[in-house]
Image (cartoon, rainbow over all chains, first blue to last red):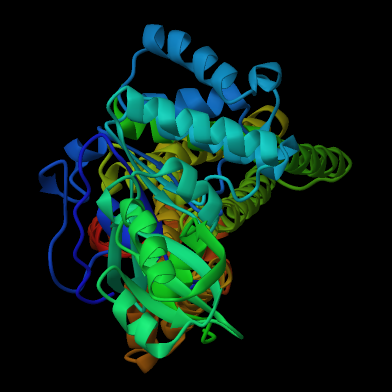
Length: 285
Length: 277
């Protein structure tokens, strides 16, 4: 990692994106105190990362997690709850609630060695939430889940945000990030290369595919006051407009310039497009 | 609840769930049955011979010492085999991550696991040592000297092997760890024999080599001290045996072993606290 600098606002779902080997999991481990940075400092909830008292307010689901396979689902949650300082009465209330929340209530007395990957993912999420943490780090929380499981995890993550928790989400599944996160950061070669607010003004940028006859260079040059142009094959261009509000004005300009538009299609910029644009093509590891 | 106690309890439960406790118990009972049967047949042979009561007692005492030596070997090897994966295995698999990110200090995790093994070893050594002594007493009428001190020293020997395994587990993979710890115990074993051989050649460099080996890994020296404290005269007079009273480690070696134990435990905690997980 180098020049890693990012801040996450309380109460938001923050997505951490990057190609394989970019340093996402290492960054999370540094924030949790599992890995010592060779330089620099990190703070979680205003305290140095790795501090024991801060960890009382943190939940963590590791990537490719392994738990004690010889424990039952209930025993695993009780063990992690006790490590968090929870008493028996609180555990008796919290453990059944969480098993129900992640859909494992019927398997409460089953040992983890008989769990599928998706079930382990669910129990892992439950252990991360056992003590109602203020910050939750989830490293690839949906990687082993079926579509229903993904939806369940998405709903749980949103519910955590709604109760005021901050969720730090590391995932390869861009579609999941897109519908879940408030803000994302892109990491490449150990560096943060961009951050985006998924619900902020930057998202108002709109891409429009235009096809028109008589699309002269002069007409294209005039478009630059509203949008960036990128030629398409044949008689078309892609426009990147600053705002959806400018689209009628652009269309009017094209007609007045003598162009004959027969296609004018606004396109949503997906997170995947943004990812490819910012992080670039796969250059191999 | 104290985190050390929570981790120690889960370590104990792991050994039970993975059937390590029951398997070790079954092997131990098997050993005691064979040992008791051996004593029984020896007694039957004695009844048909005119061997003097004194010599008979010495032979039976030596048999009990052989039994205790076997318990000692079993205990040390089981200590290493059962604990070799506990730190390095959890680091390699990532299991440690979900635990180490809970609000507990890393030393809680390491000392908790260590304490769980210490409790299991105390039970194992107590039962095996007690069972061997009880069989010797009930079947052969043998009462060794200083049995409690002997048992405590064998327990100390197991703690040395356990703690060395923990220390190396914070550095190396499971397999490498096992190879190194067993190698160290082998070195200590060899050193002990070299020291005994030195009894026949005054001023030999063998003493220096034997003592140096014991300083690197004092497990075998502790056994020889325990054997010296417990053994009857005949067993002690058997040269080239694990109980020979040639070049007996002094009480200072026991003190050194205690100090060695504390130092390697502190080193294990120190390195586990600082390493990446």
